[in-house]
Length: 139
Length: 139
Length: 139
Length: 139
View 1 (tube, rainbow over the protein chains, first blue to last red):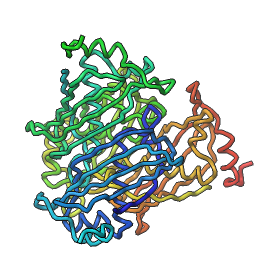
View 2: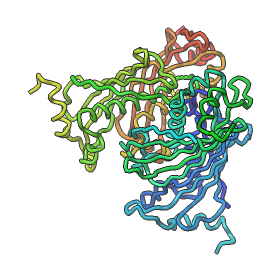
View 3: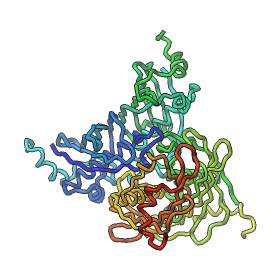
């Protein structure tokens, strides 16, 4: 299992007239979380794209428990629970506020796709090499 | 069962550098779809809020099958399959492009909440009265 | 002079916690307005891009007079006051609400650029041919 | 004169299909910049709102010189050049990339307004007290 954390300050544009963060925005927070999760492993998604592989989202599940509010400093916890197989990868996300209350949980599944041919691709070696050490039972 | 359709033109701001609509945007399309579904019943969500009830989203599930692209005229199909119970309401959404290809499916659950007291509320009568005729077995 | 109108319904995602449309969103409305202005001339920006010319924004001026609000049906009035010269084009935008109150005025300057070479380009003939009839004194 | 700096990582949602940050997004960067400028003075905009004063944007000017791109770590430089008068305040913003290239310049004017009465308000003392020391010639 691999866990990563990053923080984000909620700016005004993210709020709506209920006085809370508009629900679609959490998918962006999940994106920021998994990008930083990769970066903390020494991988940038930018380089993955430059190497010819893109990662479109194929499935998104979100539960909204409590609202995030303007100026909150949220913590995005991103977890990789299973080693990716069959060209898909699933990140589990949790959003917490400064009082450590769980606001939102999410599950985002992406797949690896060739940028040119629009065909499914294998997980790039650069990712596999960095991720495998966190899953010691897999050999 | 109640079904409603509305259309939307994809503008540039909705695209990302993969050349497709960014995945978080579909939650906005679902919002537009259910607002128009209510409007076609003679209800505006604006009036519901003004009457003191707000409808936060509590759960969102989305599957992304094919991308929507810049300048696509998408059709948002919004379906109410079950009569809402226990202060929750679930809308099923499907997004189609002009070739009638299914792009995305979504399920969005909202609950009725008192604007002032932040307590769960019953479904407002104005909605119940308009919806019930579409569910004839319920008496 | 060429004038075009289009309408847009304000959805919840566009509002902020002041209860009005967040100010950055008007640039999107201006984009929608000029795209529809071109479409009403028989041109799509999509085809311009496919022909190898892109139109980045180089300058944006906006004055905010009155707020647009949730569920407002706004009218975007887009005006081309001068025939474009030197690979630049400026659209003037005005946003009105249903009470015909002027909410926002904007001026957006874009330039024509080669998609491949990243060099300035001439205004495509497809645009020039459609626009010139609206500027009869220019020969 | 008061100058403040903050940084921001460009995530995917901010890009468009030109492969650059969509132009309306810079107004959000300016917002983040001036909020952090206030915070570095010991003021939060959140508290200003809670004290009953809101700050709507009345004017926005932006020049786009070079694009920001995905994964860029941009620096937002926010400058207060003049002591605010007549319930208006103008922030000057500059956006730089990691190569220290100037990408965008902006000028954003906001005014102080009573949250309740929707009337113009004076600049709150909490802001005035923090800002004045940076403008020594004004007494």
